[in-house]
Length: 253
Image (cartoon, rainbow, N blue to C red):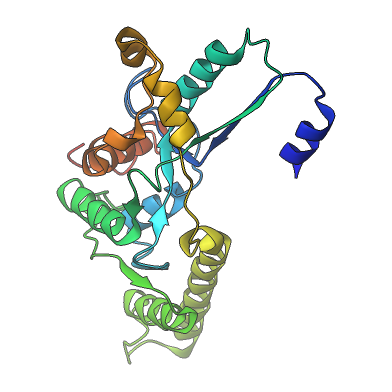
């Protein structure tokens, strides 16, 4: 609606609209894996690595539309250079997205997270590596809730018949809070984890094709050639652990 309003009132002023999808850590500049803050998909990635989340509410075959931050910046700069001096009173829209040309499927992301944390686990408060299972993906809210409760009960030790009533009540309260927090997180992410839309980046591809080879090297934003396996396991998660976790709870990385 905002874009429609801009187009209505802009008169003869040329306009460029940049539409990035989920922005994550840098691909290359200023160095691979740079990021600020714990946002977008990262709370899930960190909770899983810490052993706090073994399943999630998500369409296994759905697509997470992700783009590295530096590619968004580079595409913005390229669009500014292309249209900044334009005399044409046109409106140009550039979608910086990966879901059409290079989709990252959720079940593939789950596998990549498992591989990373299996080879480079976080450590618990006692200095022991946290072993994580393959994340289970649930398309049903009820199945997800049942999994959360069973997992919380198992981890808490509530099945120990020797526990006193007071201790059991405390553990049950902790379990319920843990389950509610996970369900709250899933509710926030549901618009993304079950979103079926795809974003065409044909205009952005044509913008890149109009650049010289030198410009492409210095200001590249070709999401089509991102190797998600390498980016997620070797760039993004290490960057997340280094710049957000500040190296806390790391083993072998």
